[in-house]
Length: 182
Image 1 (cartoon, rainbow, N blue to C red):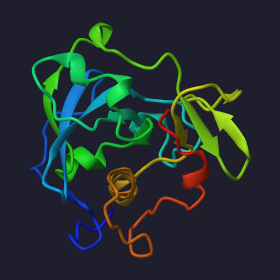
Image 2: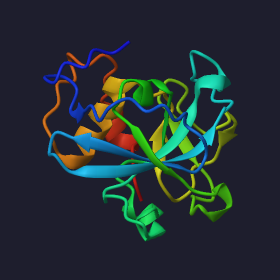
Image 3: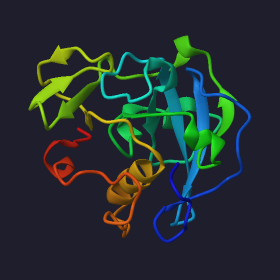
Image 4: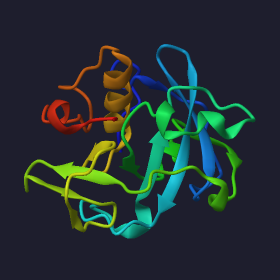
């Protein structure tokens, strides 16, 4: 489990959430810049081949630049802070993500496809582990992001200082070449 030492994790705890991550869950997260932002659970139980703990624990999320408002306009691909990330329930259990609302999955605005770069295999994959051709749109990293990885991703996107050498699961430097939002 990642340490929540404020010197290496650039996300602040909001209090643990009893809500489990379900598709349509809107959640808050707070970076060290003290701006509350929102995220969205897009899909759970992925057949993501990079998952060390199997499909039951994997969650596809979007993190947005803007705070959530009652209007769902802010929950669009135009407002993505990072490319789609695959993570796990630990971010809710540790209080780094806090579910605030559940939207009907059919009302969500999601990308038509998801793609992730695997630098070891030099290939793109979808969220189910199938090899795909590179398409226009966001490119994520073929990895399951734990607490330190999500913190590093948010820090990089916001231009905040982070301690990659000390983070529990830092983002590899290959990210800069393939981690693209548009």
